[in-house]
Image (cartoon, rainbow, N blue to C red; front, side, top):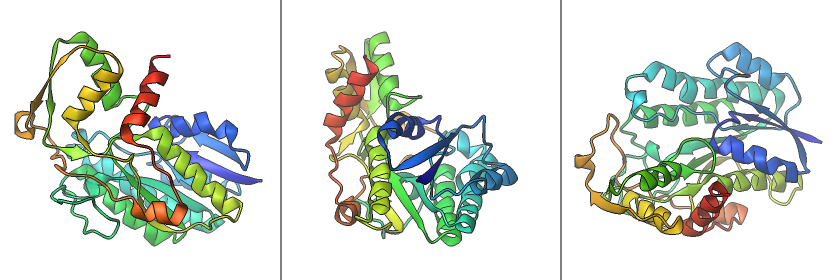
Length: 290
């Protein structure tokens, strides 16, 4: 039976993979957390990957504190960039294939149509720059790698925008939310299903592992303001949500004003059926409220 190593299983995506893996009978899983594996320690990371005959490495770990990264560049680079060199090199040594999750922040957000995988990257934050460096390091170290760029990730696990807006909506009568940043929310469970689907199709020889960069987010487009209004509508929260501009909510790291991703490639190559963002949001909120 094939063996899969999931690095960073305590985060949103890793937690969803842990939840789903019991229904995946094509492989045995090993899950690491920040406590059990320090990805900034190259020796420990190499030893973990090469300790068993893994066929697939799924890397879910990332430094995602976007604003904090501006003043914590060294650690962000270690996790988002340097660790990918080690993961790629170590996986290559044992013949393992890698699936790594990246971000829409590799783009500057000035586009007027959905970004494709071949569009020019131009990150304008430390977070985006280190994630892009990690992409390049992985592809250089291991040709058998898939990079999945995603956006606006949320789930029932950890800290995320959906859970924050649910809490604030109940606590406050008014909220100011940015309306001039547009993107596509992504339910982490949908992304986890796609990752497992890619592996399953490779194991069963239905579709061989097609290395490269792919974009994945839920279908549809909205602003953070629209996203918040919909979260509250689904959760039956009465809160006066007011639209504001990005300039009225300054942050240490600049955000992309437009980060919609074109998913045509992954749909074509892997025959992926992508859910609409509002449908997935309803599913997530239902799980949170259970």
